[in-house]
Length: 105
Image (cartoon, rainbow, N blue to C red):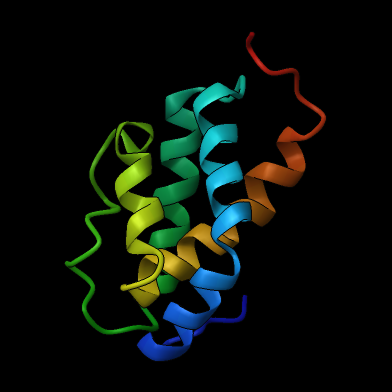
């Protein structure tokens, strides 16, 4: 997993990925993955990323349920390298997997 630790670079990349990040947020709100599955993925990814970046207590990604704080996580992508990197990894882990899962309408 490639980690981007620089806050200025994270801010630039998050701005470039705003639309995809919002779409991923919407995906997580409507997908058939359970909150427990999403929380497990978030916490696992958070541990891997936080071990490699300082300011580990800031993003509060260890708190459950993650799906209740999606807008906050989306917003924090541009200011916190940990949130940005976790969000990017989750898009790879969950979004690609979930694209084959039906949405709840």
